Length: 238
Image 1 (tube, rainbow, N blue to C red):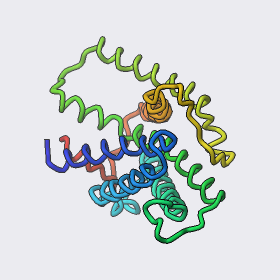
Image 2: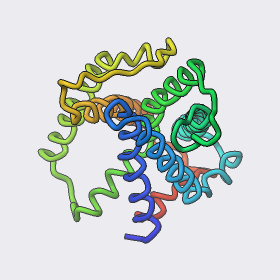
Image 3: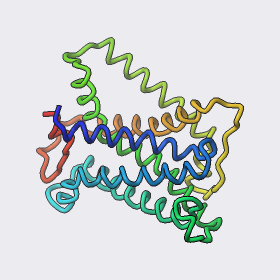
Image 4: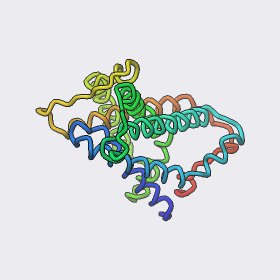
């Protein structure tokens, strides 16, 4: 496995773990939340730098359905992360405490809403690349050949996790967070913290599941030869 691929995996894994911790500010506290957020954005920049070739191909070649969705999703993620970063810094009480910034409810509402929009956007992003992640995982584990029982078990597990994500979406009141500007979050301390992280992961899993299988159905016919698209991860696993 190439060095670049290993770097991508480490960066993406670390970013995902820290991102989940950033959502748990009711558990970690505000100071840890801010420093975790800074680490997430450093890794986000590193992720974009290591995948910078993608930006050079945006205006080149033909756009398939997958490529159009991927470009829209990537643009939305950049906008969302920028909104979270700017609004987070403007109400900082730890990282930029020396600036005595005023903050305010409007900034908090934008910050929280943008952050929670990150969950479906990241889910769609992962769903678009899920086939490549599966190939990388199989290669890392030394799995070769097809096994119908194993494939069915994986699909059933994915479906059950996505179904849990539907429940978690209602439990976490995602509609209010995404569309009503609900700026307060909560977590009952009597519930185990691991459930919070499982709920967030399962919410993302809903969008991974829907994106992956929707595009798989839409692309059942052999797609035209790719023109202008760039996938650094696929390049590494050849």
